[in-house]
Amino acid sequence: MTDEQKAPTPANDAPPPGSESPVETEYKVGPGYPPKEHQWKLGCPSPNPAGRKRKVVSVLPDLKKIFEAEISKKVKAKQNGKEVQLSKLSLGIVKLVNSFAQGDRHARKDFMEMAKVLGVDLAGPKREFEDALLPSHQAIVDAFLSRQPIVPPAPPQRVIAPIELCEGAMSRERVTRRISPPPK
Image (cartoon, rainbow, N blue to C red):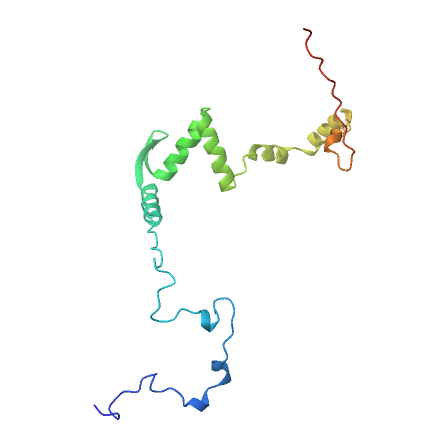
């Protein structure tokens, strides 16, 4: 092959020695850009002989897909004497609420956590009661509250630290007495 038939490569297309721009010749040292004398040189031993650590393959995405597929499956269940199809998720929530209503302490804990995560307001009946309060009823409640004695808030309890813990306090010398030797 002659020089005319060779395809131009980036190495062959290098600019002439005198035409380099000042931006290319200037090298700034900083984070990720070590000085030239401290850079790894080709052919020398690797600075990282163990190599890059392998990426740990996670099964979480697969488990999440399986979990979502299973909770969205429909199953037959009886509700009010009729057979209906519910998703496993909704059926599980119905069973959790029923267990909570029956007084199961473990269900109560799960129920409260779920309500907190979902932002469910469990004080709904109280709000309905306040909304249903008529103005005449409000007057009765106000009159009752006005007859109640006003108890001032208790003053905060002061804790007095021992003198050894106070800053700048002189330390007490410990007074000890000699123990007399036992009689002979």
